[in-house]
Length: 169
Image (tube, rainbow, N blue to C red; front, top):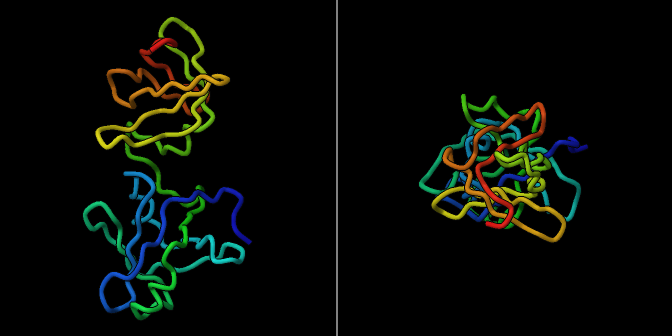
């Protein structure tokens, strides 16, 4: 049975080389979890999520390449194209100092310097140049750049993000 805290982190995009390695397109720049964890869950095989042992993994430019136990040929790797990859949040390595995992920001309240509640984080998006907090308050959506200039504090214990941002920006 898959863990309740399973976090989808990427999608398999076909064979890499001739020995059964796979290309993995991470959903975010935080692909470090994929390279650090050795048990992934495969999602979307038309069956319940199933665990798989990762026997080798490394970054390769903007993607990750991985070797999964039992996947020995390019044909086997290509059969997994489109399968999503998840990892239990409990198995994530501790984040580096001053960093947070995006998944931990989802649902956090966002308050500006004036104390105005702007909404809650509904997603973290990547614009290529930087990450953006998608903050929802009813029908209104704000995109707040996740950069030091605009994010004053992230307090995961209080589920709170303090920002230098206004509701009408």
